[in-house]
Image 1 (tube, rainbow over the protein chains, first blue to last red):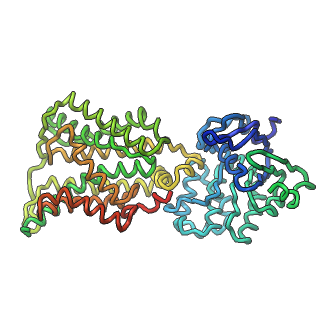
Image 2: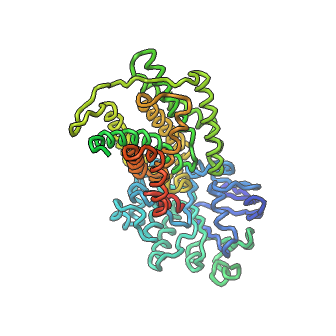
Image 3: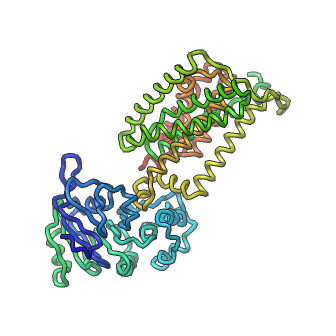
Length: 231
Length: 289
């Protein structure tokens, strides 16, 4: 139900790939400064959900509302301009462009040319500005993808599998970054790393076969053992 | 082979390669960014040549004709992009190929309606020649080469020094990610299509004094332009430049060795390059997408 205070409301969302229905009647809410996680097995529909919110997939039913604006039917660039940004899991930066050029594109889209928050969260990017993004490590690519997405102070960040394949030290760094980011933006994180999810999330939605099967919203239920039941 | 023919042969090859480059660069960018095969570029090439012919006929100014051709190419390509291509960008690649071929054939019909079937001559605007290594070379062919060099530099600067150009390069890698940042990719598509159409028309205008302008002139260069795009690697500007030089030289020098080679040798070169590098000289990144 739309409470009016939420940054993002999803109600009755269903998505199909051709004739195959992959999401069924999804409902979720994200409040200001909340970190909301979606957990579930591969194929549960987590990435599909994020792509649908970001406008890359059109739902067959349901509504998606961000700050009173309906996102259904809008092209992805309009949704991004409304402050709902998707950070894909593929870690595909624009490899032929330098780090600086990658950030310039983020600035061009949002008219936000203040890169200080980016270099504050990820000081390493400062030293890599003139390097072609194709030569970055997996962790550096993830930093760059988050960095260019946070330009323009988005209201909601949709982060897909951010720690997949990354070294523990970088995962730990990202954990802190997500906590800091949540002070300005709400986050929906799709993640398999349950200890990380439980450490930072205010709410967890467990998904299975395209449905939300549980909503964990209190300290007692946001635990790795509880989440594991749904995997 | 008469060695005194080598210098003019090379210059001829460079000038014909320059025409192929101007046409192929648009095809290559359109495929790279929008994933369409835009055969209608050959129509803008013909339109460019015919507009140059008509303006030159009525005003006596070839260069005014070139300007009018470029403007007409831009206008026609913009209209076709808005009316036709915007509706099919998300369709399968073959859909764009068939649709654009339809646009090309329809356009050729309109050209026949207005200008008829008779080939039209466009006089060479500069008939003077200059001596290079003791051989007289037509200055106009050198100008064609210089225009192609200037276009390459301008396109390079546009793609590497402007934010729209950087967005196009990023889009060639991953359109979804560009859109996800909040950039209107439909606008990028229009800009790219406009550049392609304008350059094709410029190619037609510059080529007009070197050939007879006729309604099927686009179809006549189709195979060579496609070869340039494929050899260079789809979406690669540098590849397009290098392959247009290669194809131009093979056509020119091949005809000096044995005339039928001019038509056959470029295909052999293309097959050879594709055997060694199936994605073309600089096309690897694109095909991985």
